[in-house]
Amino acid sequence: MVWLKFTISFFIIFTSVNASELSKEEITYFKIIDLNNDGFVSIDEINQSTGIIFQLIDTNKDNKISLLELEDLKEIINILK
Image 1 (cartoon, rainbow, N blue to C red):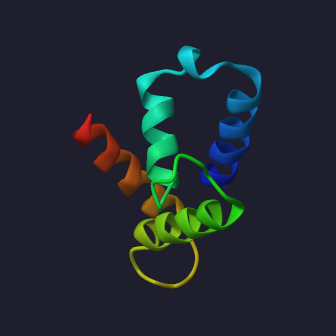
Image 2: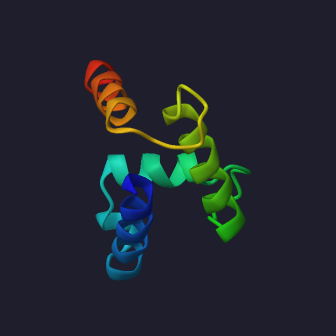
């Protein structure tokens, strides 16, 4: 759900601003999703990125993301900041 919101936000942002107005964080997200580094993001890259991210969050591999797994992810992100 988080990545669905991110993906929707991602496209709203990219359709409403010029590249010169993007933050470093937004550019980083774009580069992460651009798996083949061609400067474009395809629907396949979004699907692959979402799948990879889901697998990373689903630490017990039950094909579901629990609140505990989401909390663990948030903690890791905060540590990396």
